[in-house]
Image (cartoon, rainbow, N blue to C red):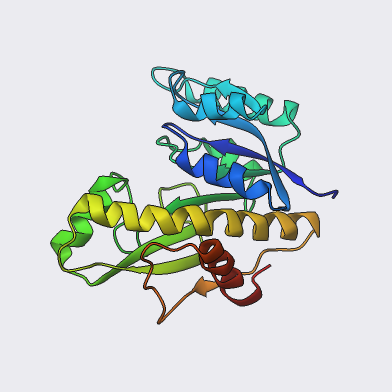
Length: 233
């Protein structure tokens, strides 16, 4: 397959992860965001897509038969030649036919180290509050393949992030999101290269062990998140 691989990003909100994916393209990636799909017509991610000259489509989910939603999504993906999907704050369960059509070619990112603090209802601030209530000293994020149920697909990569003594949920969320914006584009690039080369992306496991200082990254996002934890691409 010719690079870059055409990607659809699914988002329900403002699209900060989408923006991180778009920004990373400027430095050369194996993926290119060709389409943004949202269940909400007022999602800020749609405006980001249009501003970047990318396709944008709304597929409403509420009060619609699942078969109609599946068909509309699959039609949009096919019409844009999509080979890979990235979930970026998409707050709906991806329809079964879509999951099956893009098995091992669809990623999501979760703001904790799965399987801890995952599952239905565990998203956004709900996750960070649960982490703080549990009293653990490390959280992080998980990039995983999408399966039929929430947060159950195989893990591609994880990165630990410290929980500091004076953290509240907003402080922890900001720290994890900062790493998320750095790591997710690298994971997307890694999967896109595997798809282009017609091979299966190998799980990379827990990355960055012993070095999750974070505050607040950079130095070219910690040298592209430490060259995607030592040559993951």
